[in-house]
Amino acid sequence: MKNTIVLLLFGLLPLGGQDIKFPESFEKLAAKAKESVNVNLDGTMLQLAGNFLSSRNAGEAQAKQLSAELKGIYVRVFEFEKEGEYTDADVAPVRSQLTGARGWSSMVNISEPGERVEVYAKKEGDRVVGMTVMVSEKRELTVVYVDGPIDLKQLSDLVHRNINVKVDVGKPSKK
Image 1 (tube, rainbow, N blue to C red):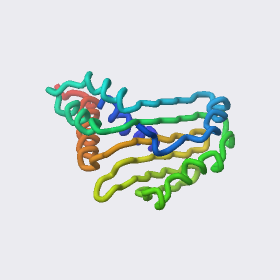
Image 2 (cartoon, helix red, strand yellow):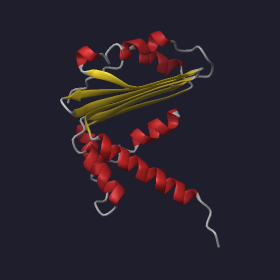
Image 3 (cartoon, rainbow, N blue to C red):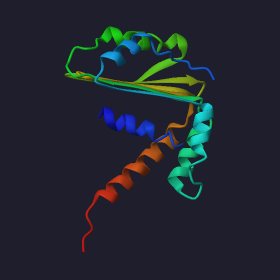
Image 4 (cartoon, rainbow, N blue to C red):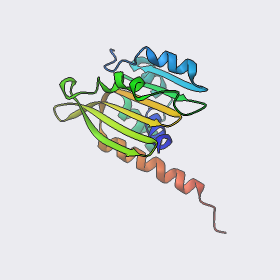
């Protein structure tokens, strides 16, 4: 489940000021983790990446349009050797920033034994201007923050288009 969400948000990649700040404790988590990912793409880097997308390819054109106004994409992933190497207290500083007083609201909160998925959106009027996804598993923690306006309908269309492409490519041909 976590991998799907992260891949969907990474689909925006080919596609100022950071509202959510990652706590200093994340540096300690990275040192303890057997693997860690640290991605910081500000608006300039996103625009540069967008130059590599083709306007002739419908999916790439849609991704380019969707990401045109983004201010940044920030990702932290920590994979640990064993359970218990991070706690809910390590995630609390991020979660405490995602409050209604700061314009954030919870969109999705799924809890299963050993796994929790949280999706938050920041709105200004009718526009979504930020999204944060947090996935906590027993041995893995992922936080993805997208800063900037996000058209959820366009994102949904892009995701469905890419899922259909993956499914079609994966099917064996019948000859």
